[in-house]
Amino acid sequence: MNLKNQKPKLTVVVPAFNEERNLEFTVKGLLYILNEKHSESYEIIIFDDCSIDKTGIIADRIALENRGIKVIHNKVNMGFGYNYKKGVEEAKGEYIMIIPGDNEVISSSFGYLVDSIGKADIVLSYIDNVEERSWVRRAISFFYVKLLNFLFNFNMKYYNGISIYPVALVKKTMPTTFGFAFAAEIAIRLLKGGATYIEVPMFIRPTNKTSAFKIKNIISVIKTITSLFWSINIKKERVEI
Image (cartoon, rainbow, N blue to C red; front, side):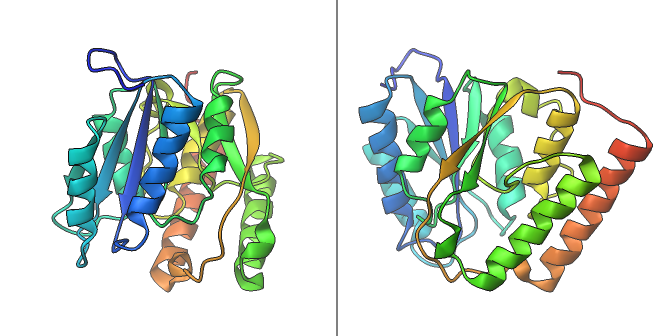
């Protein structure tokens, strides 16, 4: 339970941009796992990323009904990476996890992740039912993972899944980008620093969202990967674990 005077073990960051139809379902599924399946303390930080629908209103109502939840309203749309970075700065927990507010991830997946805390330094996840995504999205994700594995000599299953990190470790390697490559950047820097990891499956619902494949996002990813390759493989920079 989330005890009033107890330091939360887990901070969950929930970014939401125009998710009035999905945010409450996301949080309810998360709360079920945290309250019914796990007794550890927690806090949830919802980021209303300058939504123009009722997302902010819904977030505030959810927070009023649950004392372990707080809401941050961004004055401008900042993106997923910014919300994660800000969440790390605000976190009071020992560990941190980020979950999109779009209700794409089936809530039982949260349980697999939380159950794995302590089994390794970091907990990473991969999509086990990839057939729920379009063949275009699957193809792009496949080549993205293959490219990163090749460039950095890994054999990872996925880089953009929900992850759980010790807050102290993430603060050593805060992302340099607010774009979609921020998750891969954190994971690669920590793994190259010697962090141990475990990969667990997560399951998703069908979705038609494809915002990650806009031109500006693709350019951002290319820039981040190029910079990361230079610092990791050429300059041999390493995070002290």
